[in-house]
Length: 149
Image 1 (cartoon, one colour):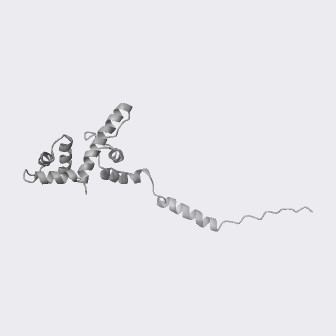
Image 2: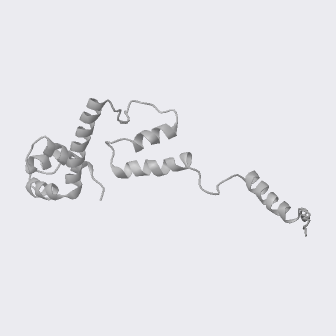
Image 3: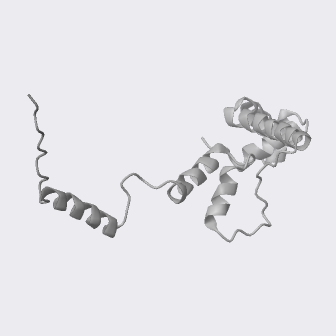
């Protein structure tokens, strides 16, 4: 199941060091049900993955700073002139979830890799004409070889 906004807020509060109950209240759960919700969310695989993913992103940013590698993280203020550039930025964004990144990669595929056999009508007609023409072309004369005795 995809991670919800409440789960993201819970994970953010847990990273800040809050208890399960306080994190659940921060995420928007009522104070009456916060202890149960906090306990349930702390065991949720999506929340655990979100906490771990954010830590990995922080480590990747630190390594990028030290090594001088540029991470592609799209800025919300950047306007993309070409949809292909936007999809490429989303696909390479380390902060996006994997589902969003894979959807961007799927949408980008036709722009980068053409399907086998995918061509226009003119190319198909020309190829068919070559096949037909080769069937009715003149047969080459046989080679005559002299045999010495």
